[in-house]
Amino acid sequence: MTLDQVKKLNIPQSPGCYQYFNKEGKLIYIGKAVNLRSRVFSYWRTSANHTPMKAKMVKEISKIKWVEVDSEIEALLLEANLVKKHQPYYNIMLRDDKRFNYIHISLEDEIPGVFLTRTIGKAGKYYGPFVSGLAVKETLKALRKIWPYCTMRKIQKKSCFYYQIGRCLGPCGQKVSIKDYKDQVIKPLILFFEGKKKRVIKSLPEEKREYMQQVLENTHVIGVAEKYANDVVELAKILNLKKVPQRIEGYDISNTFGKEAVGSMVVFNGGEADKNEYRKFKIVGKFSSDRKKGDVQMISEILERRLNNDWPLPDLMIIDGGKQQLNVAARILKKYKQDIAFIGITKGEGLRSAHAPDKIFFPGESKALELPLASPALHLIKRVRDEAHRFAISYHRKIRGKRFLAG
Image 1 (cartoon, rainbow, N blue to C red):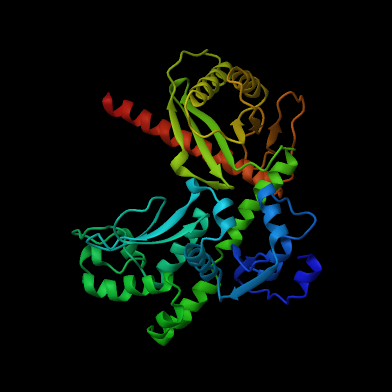
Image 2 (image 1 turned 90 degrees about the vertical axis):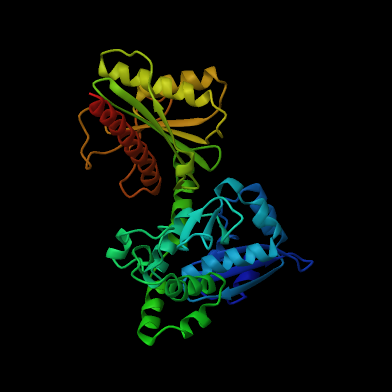
């Protein structure tokens, strides 16, 4: 199909799912969108930065169908249910199994709860797969406002924190019976996840129906996830990378005058933090008393240990530091014969204010790049850097706290 042919289809601008078919009439791909027309058109724009597999798919598209829904949450769930049912070829080929997320309703627990998971067990109900963990988290957060589910798994003496703020019905503290909790929360959630929204709404009192509709319509889950994915594309363009980076790793260190020194490695997949892939390092080497030299030596140890493991290799490394840190990174990557893109980010000497410009350093370049504060690429780099910093500090505080308690 051509863009002109697609424009004649009168595709609506509402949320929903689109379906692509080949000339044999076989369903080859299912996607979701905040705006169906805009999303479908984007596949045919000359500026589209398609992977070879996606470009091949676009050439095969001969027919397009779509299903409109009332909210982004419903589009997200509908896509998952349709993909699970039809297993379109390109949905399988374009996805990364390690990034799948599922919603799990734990019917096997004393208190059935709702959880985000990457593994499928033998009990309970599972909905998915979902590529975006962020989108699922935002979905669950919104649905908890309508059906305040519990995540305590077992009855206890006191109700959980979420009961205090109205996000749990209280089965954990026996404020409501398990039967009533299942009837009022778990059963409606199961119906909603299965796409039976009308049936669920019909059973709600009128005032709650209006509230439910407001929550669903004002919760943005696809848009946020798509923005993060677009940030990655922008980053590839700004940094002139060979390909759009799927896996990005960020590194930082934390210590108190060289003591209790630790390092962190955080991982972002598709622009989102993937906490299951995070790694922390207790630094064991001896280092220079000079702070700058010591910091460089610590980064060196972290990178050596990281590359000595069989973890998946990143497409981009982001290191908290400037030229010296990049020089040591270049030396270590060369030693291990790894062709991985890497950059450093720093605010410069004495500039730790939130208003100070961030400087991005490239290997072999004498001058740093300063991106506009509104740059999506800078936002992503800073998210990775700040998360690595947070993770390193939290581990350092834990180590320091243990030493303090020991004596």
